[in-house]
Amino acid sequence: MSKSLSAEASRPLPVLHVSASREDHGGIQGILRHHHEFDGDLGLDPRFVSLFDRAVTWEGACRSLGCHGWQSIGSIRRQFAEAVEPWADSLVIYHDGWGLRWFVSCDRAFRRIVFLHTERPHADDLVRTFAPRVDGFFCVSRSFLERVRRLCPDFPPERLCLLPLCVESAAPRLVRGNEGSRGGPLRIGFAGRVERGAKRLDRLPDLMAAMDRLGLDFRFDVSGDGSYLPALRRRFASDPRVRFLGWQANEAYRRTVASWDVFVLVSDYEGFSRAVMECMCCGVIPVHPDFSPAAVELLGPAGGIGLYPTGDMEAAAKRIAAISRMDPDTLNSLRRQCAAHLADHTVDRYHQTYRRFLDLVTSLPPRAISPLSSHFERILPLGAYTRLFPRRF
Image 1 (cartoon, rainbow, N blue to C red):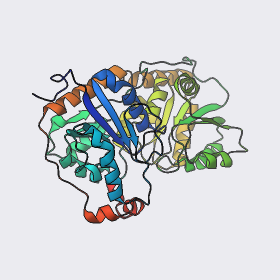
Image 2 (tube, rainbow, N blue to C red; image 1 turned 45 degrees about the vertical axis):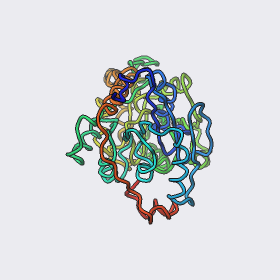
Image 3 (cartoon, helix red, strand yellow; image 1 turned 90 degrees about the vertical axis):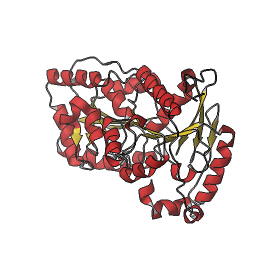
Image 4 (cartoon, rainbow, N blue to C red; image 1 turned 120 degrees about the horizontal axis):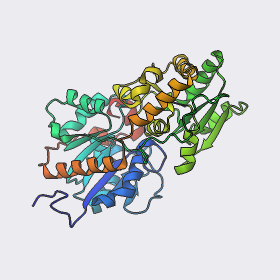
């Protein structure tokens, strides 16, 4: 009998989500939280393993390996194999492919899927590495799916799934109304992990200096937390225009977002940002780096005014200034278009697409799997490995 969802409805399909981290407040972690809450309602039995979290705060079948840079790859593999031993024969979803290179020979998976969230550096190399060893790909944008097709022309197209990320209430919800420019300072915000890394929040001082040179009257909110927050607090301690709101959720977060005129990202790369999606659903105009075709896809009607060259804070400031000069009717029209652009990114659509693809993958024969990690790799500490082989992350 096929091990499909429909044929084995009496037994929930075990699904193991593997990720770098699970317990923080990033976009991928938001997706993981969603699956932790809803997979059971979809006839699934969800399990979770993360590599770098130090603690387990989630209820249910969750493990954290607490890995660190001095551990050898071999030690991490052994930890992982022990953690998943009780969950053998799961369908394993590797979020952004983290760990697949090391774990493919010891995960005891029934099927494997890579969930491609982020078009990060070296994504081409990673996709080519993953393709011979997985049974399917989830792609969060059409441009990422087309990229996989170009890179892996022999990969069966039915095993590629465009999974439109959801916003909890994706229907247009212009909470503050359509009053156009309200006068007073322009309200600008950032929401997400407060990190230097890929988020590049060390660029904020340059962005604000560029806006000052343009004579913009603005207020800037930072909603979120992370390792770079103390440095930003010190840098802007004497600037009353900057507010640090901490981690917000649910209605408090939505009220904050709805008060903004502009949402700005200064990162080097992203996935299909759910923070941008939330803002656009509230009629907030995104100002976003143009690092991939997915950015154009995400911004839709706001792309013409909101996209700027990655890393160019002068250009970002000019984009914000252009939004501040828009007449009320044009601004209101753009707000409505932004909200409508994402109206079909609903929870129901996400669930239906996700479950249907799992059903398909489990009904197809498994693809050939070949181990990746060598003995040399396994003796290396993780910190050394990431520096010696940066194109594998």
